[in-house]
Length: 292
Image (cartoon, rainbow, N blue to C red; front, side, top):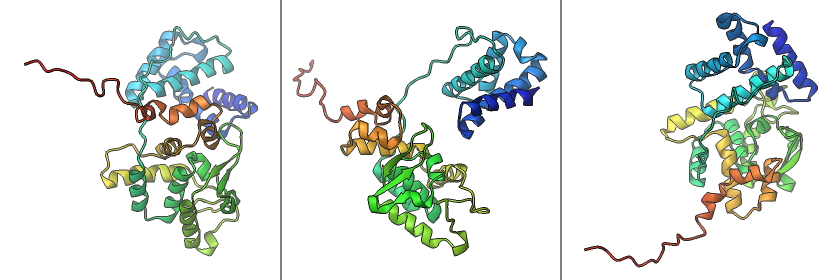
């Protein structure tokens, strides 16, 4: 039963031309929910109540230590399962999304990024990290780059259609290009792919997995003893913020990042934080007498 349901999810999403990553994501919390129905509730998924679903989600959050934002993803996946696969109407009032705090995301400064890049000895990892910051790419986009996508003569990188089904060109710094060339020259002749820029170690006919660089960055930050959340995505966020600080307009930046909406880009660049640097507090210069 479980496999049949999961296969139907995959069939529906494949028909909708969703990416492999999206399909995998939609199964993340539905699969354990199906196990919960059988092993704990002893019910068919179509017979569970809203109370059963809330109990499952509460237990899931406690067991895995999930953030409220992640719980909301789980709720969305379950809603898709009930509506698209089971054909059951979902009542959002009975299983509501969690309210979450909207905190400013961490954006590493330029000195932090320069210091981190300087600490990376492996040329392949250094090239990948350079592209994350230099061009503001998603980690999945860096992993899927082809050799021909690096266009140094035009100072740009071609990014094939990805998350939003649109291709685009992004900026390429000379410094990043030199790091990429250094990496490429270091490869033995038999390890240079004619297709992918970053390949798997054991099979150069396949692109590298995102976990390769994600895991490394986490370990390297810990090795440096830094108390910060420097990740692949925080480098992309830094590209957006720093580019805006340097004068890039929001529309251009939105295209660089591959966003469908400028509103999404505005979140990345922390407009509120930047605005504080251009205006003084109305209290500045106020003469205040002290009580004796």
